[in-house]
Image: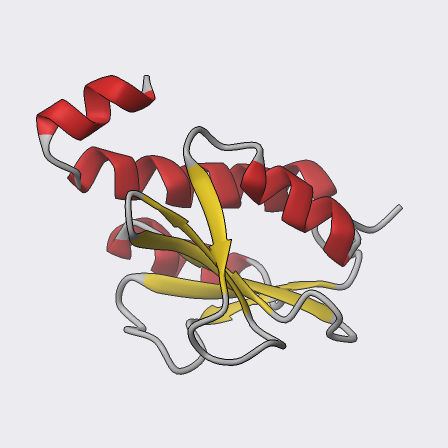
Length: 118
């Protein structure tokens, strides 16, 4: 079974202090923690895609090993990957990539904010 837009939305909002915002228009969901973006998606897209932050060295390896993972669309290609949810990647891997993105953003927050989230 392939992850749906509704399931992706719930997964993103399940992160501590995560909120959904629409700064780029009503069709693009932007998921943030403490005002910092950790995921973007057009949840009704076919195929579903989600852009997530990624460690630059890991990002290159993921792109090389998985055709469904490409450089971030309209984002800093060094730090962002766009994942196409087309069934070629396990749903657990997509969820892990979202979780990793959230963790990267939280790790970049000031200490007092990180403590409130963990």
